[in-house]
Amino acid sequence: MAKSEKPPPLAGGSPAAGLAQLNDRSREIFRQIVESYLATGEPVGSRNLARLLPMALSPASVRNVMSDLEQLGFIYAPHTSAGRLPTELGLRFFVDALMEVGDLTEQERGSIEAQLAAAGRAQSVESALSETLTRLSGLTRAAAVVLTAKANIRLKHIEFVRLEPERALAVLVAEDGQVENRILTLPSGVPTSALTEASNFLNARIRGKTFAEARADLEAAMVQSQARLDELTQKVIAAGLANWSGGAADDRQLIVRGHANLLEDLHALDDLERVRLLFDDLETKRGVADLLGRAENAEGVRIFIGSENKLFSLSGSSTIIAPYSDGAGRIVGVLGVIGPTRLNYARVIPMVDYTARLMSRLIGGG
Image 1 (cartoon, rainbow, N blue to C red):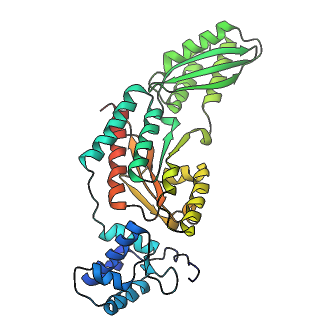
Image 2: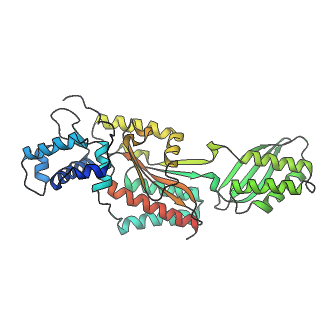
């Protein structure tokens, strides 16, 4: 067998332009090639296609159409004397112009709802997300991911606990039950009473606010209250503000579940190599976070196929993601799945969309 070739990179062209060049027969042949690939991962030849088509066509006629599709950049031959597989451009064309998105079954809806409801009752939002990702991964047989924005967590309580003369533990409690501990460096000579006063001052002003909102309000309150606050208490508050304001790396949290699903249904060493590269990509958490961040300002589901996203250009993976929001309609995170380009798009897209809407309802208290 000749050495396997990589599919050509995503070329220019729009689905609308491609659609205009295809008659009904060509569309049906192309649809069969894509659906066969999504089901089996294997190339399909003209003889098998002729048997699958609803119209009577000879293998020679099918080969002529396949040649036209290849010239359009929609399909390619992985090696000589092989059938054809869709290119990334072909998959994009199929998803945007030909695919009919299915609907979830009652069982699938119930499974996702039950997982979210159980996790939401007993645990924090972070834990609920983790449990929901596990279920989403199982249903889609892909890796499930979520990007949460820590900056959107709403605060409930803060407490300073002295560890050493010049070190304290700042305990931050969020409204959703999450607890975050941070080590704080104290100015020299801070008494325990200053820690208590600083906690009281902060707790009177932070409840229900995000980090950013609390910081802005507290800085203004500090200016107004300087005459009433002890100097060392002011320093504790200032140190706390500097400590929990965080940086870009602290503002986002990435959770990935279901790596093992990507090892199922491998057909060749090439598949194994692509999965290995995908595992490497998933370890690059900054890159994955940046990818998911591209959907934070979008409405509904977004789909990235192969090299449309540079992070997954080597592994040839697809990403289907959707944002979710809080009760005020503010987007607070993005969730979805990452897997091979032969994901079952028609089934996965509504799953991701439905899960994101349920998460919005959970966070919003609806």
